[in-house]
Image (tube, rainbow, N blue to C red; front, side):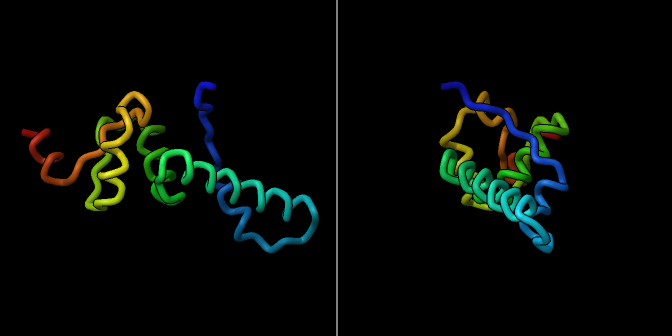
Amino acid sequence: MPMKVFYLDLCALKRPFDRIENDRSQLEALAVASVLEAFQQALGFQPIDALHLASAIGAGCDLFVTCDDGILRRARRCSEDLLKVRVVDPLEALSQLR
């Protein structure tokens, strides 16, 4: 089954932190948390890291620069075609500028 592409806007991302006033808010909060959990289990990225990567991809970046060894390790296990952005450390990024 091909991977589906998701974009969660800020309203959706904030939903788990909203004051729950009705059933809809509660169900949406649980759904957003479940979507983020699924991303973590599918590729191993923490939800916030997945959001950072998604932002870089959405912005059309060529490189995602990080000092986070966990992100770098997980990214090396994924193809660039899957991530749609090259994940590098700052030294690698600097070498790309030269």
